[in-house]
Length: 318
Image 1: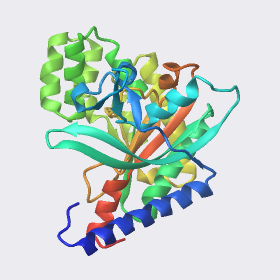
Image 2: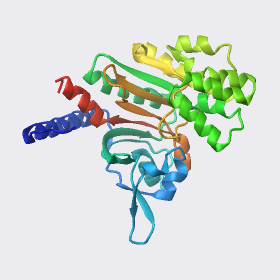
Image 3: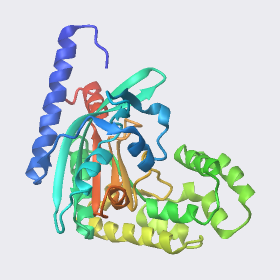
Image 4: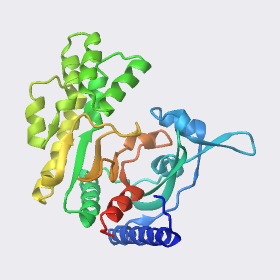
């Protein structure tokens, strides 16, 4: 945000600091340990495991040895690269961080403040439930009206694997789904034939609602083994949330796509009613760890601190 008066800018900075400390205290009370990730990433390594990231959005730095690094566009990749190669069997880590990520845009280099958590080493469903509960706790701490949208990358990836898309076709499909462009999606998918999977893909944007509603919508749709696995995992999580009375704040969306392509399993995004940008985003990313070493159970989320502060500040709630 821009300010005309120095006093206002200092006051805003102080509120950001207090908000950060407030969330830190919450995470410390849940036994998460603080870590400070490196600011630099190897360019080629990052792009190789984040193929959906547009290369021109990364902020590149030329090293003294002539190699190209980037200012980190994502904290999770940074942390996993550091830990996966030296992972110890049966180790479990609950970590949190405060940092900036960096992106190039038409307006120049953008710095985005984030806080986040990573829960590593716990393969049981209780890790998913604990992390989702924590995300709901953060949202409810600052607003009564919020929603956590939840989806499954297994469901969508399983559906897309029924097709033999070229790289350009795949990108086009992902873009149309990400932008929720239902009409153009149906037209574009029509060229791939009248197979059952094509009909499911055409209507994927309509598969949202409560878990019961989603199950009802997909009962007559094409489902392969991976898609069934994705919906069953969401069902297990939903059962836990219903027992704790938290299911009322969950909306399921089986067309959900995360910004980064390394998620494999449950994914989620948290919103306030008066902001169209995510306050929280995350999910399970076991497959990412395999890129740097052994496959490690891993789930986490980031809190978009700048967006959270902006929403609360404008309403005078902080």
